[in-house]
Image 1 (cartoon, rainbow, N blue to C red):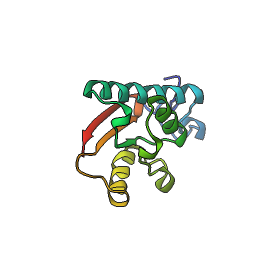
Image 2 (image 1 turned 90 degrees about the vertical axis):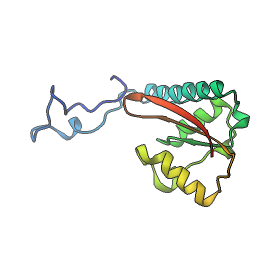
Image 3 (image 1 turned 120 degrees about the vertical axis):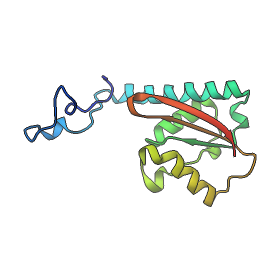
Image 4 (image 1 turned 90 degrees about the horizontal axis):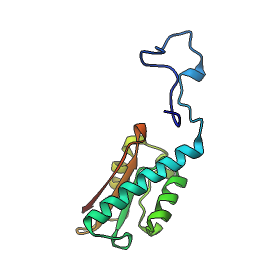
Length: 139
């Protein structure tokens, strides 16, 4: 709760017309801590799913990450040892599309880059509450 929050809303501090704008929007009082937690969560979940599947970063054909920003994806890529050329991104075209990032990225990649039968695709994300997960599948 100390990394990201919205001060108002919920039962403790319900929305009202008396609230100031600062209370209605997301706060990130520790941006570095939030960045580190997001990267750690994506790395841990991705490494775990690759280990369980018995694959390494070199086996991954495409990586479709959640893309809050390019710094996070670059840090995850480095820590996992993923080839940057295998990363799929829609961030420069569409910005942070939140929960739609991975499906949007896979859709555009399928059209523009070609995903082929048998490709090994890693998806990893971090989201609300800093929960995260990863999925590995054959296209």
